[in-house]
Amino acid sequence: MLGITDIWTYVLGTVAIVLLPGPNSLFVLATAARRGVATGYRAASGVFVGDAVLMVLSAAGVASLLQAYPPLYLVIKYAGAAYLGWLGLAMLRGAWRRWRDRNDPATPRLIDEVEPAGPQEPFRRALVISLLNPKAILFFVSFFIQFVDPGYAWPALSFLLLGLIAQVASALYLTALIFTGTFLAAQFRQRRRLAASGTTAVAVLFLGFSLKLAAG
Image (cartoon, rainbow, N blue to C red; front, top):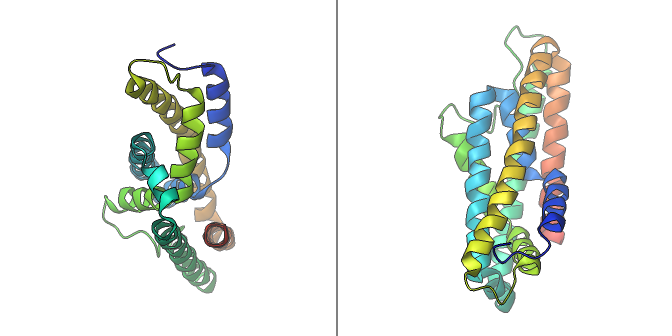
């Protein structure tokens, strides 16, 4: 089918990969809980664009370049780890402020230290999180190539269809997370200690992603 071999295996594999928790999906969930559905979709758009860029780079052979020049790979890897670590620490500061002011009448918010009021900020942050993930580039190229028929005359079309399938799966999953985030937001408004605990949990996960990326 358009140069794709065993497309249903690819679909099942893609769904399984999309469902694995990662910094992108976690950021979208937290953003929706913090600022609502519309802003959650802005963050999701950053993920879509970032993933699309990584897919194009993978199809263009950039992953092979990173493998051929390990120092370049290390620079991108540690930059991504540092960025995720910074996000995690900023969230911890926000959690401490929420806990300290838990009796304040102000509404508890999630990752308010990380997201300024600008409407484009969630998109940009999600985009950076996506792009500063060199392992994703290597994964895309190693995964995609298994399902592209090398004898097909238009391999770009095969990669395009594979990427579209991955983006649709991601869109459905992130949509579920966005509406889950809005439910969590209602709980945070009513329970200030829960808001602080939720922010702390998200912060710890981001710091874990950072350490895993740096050590991997």
